[in-house]
Length: 354
View 1 (tube, helix red, strand yellow):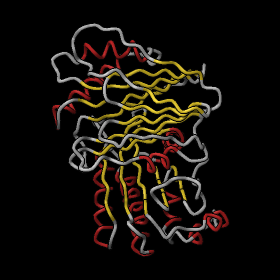
View 2 (cartoon, one colour):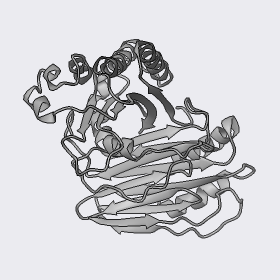
View 3 (spheres, rainbow, N blue to C red):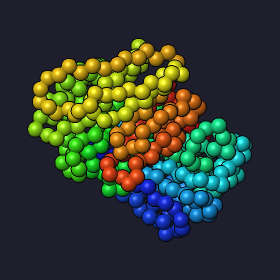
View 4 (spheres, rainbow, N blue to C red):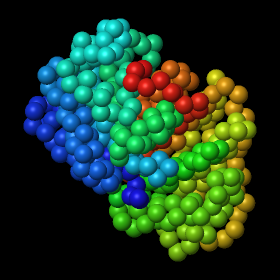
């Protein structure tokens, strides 16, 4: 498993930049361990989305590639973003089996067929939503078609975007660790001090410590254990989110500069973690928060390389992938890694259309 996420933003201006997007998608699929056939399909999905920008002359067209692991399953998100001209989703819904008629391009049928999950947002149809993009198309692919149902479920509850300070690739100090079983979901976001390989090794050490502890551990107690695992390192900011699906109980705890915003049953909660880092090599009492979830919850967690988020849509008709694309905005100039995690419950089970 890679110590951090894979990421690339590729502006699409012409056929040459579309070719670059194809090549990078293939490289990321290879790093994620996709089979040769699935790698070829990831390249084809990227190609169709990129060529759509060229053929339809979109404004500020962008292909965003993001690779991550969820419950040890490699996932590749291939997103198409633009500022116009937009499309009529009503036409798309009339052509569900032949999506070429919706104005998104003839290749969209291929994208639909090869993606495990496909979420589409049109600002033209949802003008009440604040969105930096007119159109968002987000395809999620797993390593093979056997993982299809699990990838659909992951995409209905979770999205991860992580851009290293270098602008693309992986190897920084930011990392996200997702663990799930039949009852619990645990999501941990890490911002290790330092740069490059040294910071990535600290993040890997945090991940290894998480794997040693059962999912029922309360986040605050788990962080006390992580404290000692980071002895003789530069340390890290860490935030742990744990959801008990049986009790409907959300537990949260963190130390450091990670921002957490929670939309809980219509109420907006902004958590502030105690300042500092884990890795002081001495015991300290860490406290956390618990929330009873009645109808629904959406959480955004991000490191300090991401612009601070002031609001979080409680509209669960939007998928986590769409919300994440709307919220992701690394600070400029980029002086640190920027990582954003969006998670929600209940998951958005509807696939293929937003």
